[in-house]
Length: 217
Length: 217
Image (cartoon, each protein chain N blue to C red):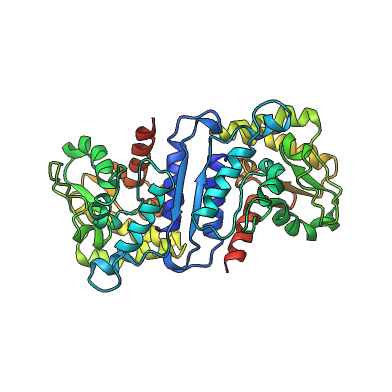
């Protein structure tokens, strides 16, 4: 949905594919759906539901021959179950991919969950089939001052501004004792690319890309 | 067709779009078609024709609602006319986009055409409706020693090796008097990103992306 986030996901998927020539790569059907109504506004109870547009896009991909679906937008996973119910193909969940990679970090202390207020409110990283993690989350001030403006800045291509805001949010989680950081919004790794967060870091986009490659293998 | 080249094209298209939020972006349908048979082998007269696979992909995009088609692979434009004939939607030509950007550089001397042997043999940058340019092209030794191995290296994700090879090909064109360089293979700007070629440089991928944004505006 975020177009730069979709490009970042595709780049990670292509790089994660063991390939010597074009013909070794995974065939992909991609829909950039910038017209999907704002997910965060909808979760806050104002604004149109994105579900009809998401369902339409998912069905169109299935009808065009897709054999597996992914959605590189964490917040939109609030509607994952509602979409999955309408499909006959598997629909990989971004949090399942990220949580699998987070498992081995639990000994380091509570993991920090860097995500939008919508992703946190919809409890997208509390998966029913998974042992619940004791997440450290940004508080409301941190969300409204740093995380949410950073996500909007990436969407407006202002990466430097987004990076500065997100580094403050990471620092706050670190000070409260986070032992790792999960980047659980697909705009965040775009801004933090190449930054040393001084903590082990899981990139949900990268983990979803790897899950796709593993699915296709 | 080259998956990294498709990602590079999409990144350039998203960055070229004036946008403050997701909803300002261009809706896109994308097919990564790694299964399309090798274009270069087909142009050399050995190997399967890619035309049936290209036609199938183009028709599928048109049937899925695409209103305009582009193909971020220069060599595959050998089949542009055969595909365009079968479509009802416009099909932008990558060389037309790049040639429009090259026009103002002609006063600087003969432009260098950095392209695959297939693109050169199929005369993809000699467009019927355009004043013919007096291109400086890599000779056969330069193609086989530097350009073609570099293109294959990008497809195998060995960007550093590709860069070293391409810089030798650029230097050879510069020594023969090139006044500008047109990167007319979508793998080439991936390898030369951030390099100063010491000459004005046109990136056909970037120009095709801009043409898409202009078409959608």
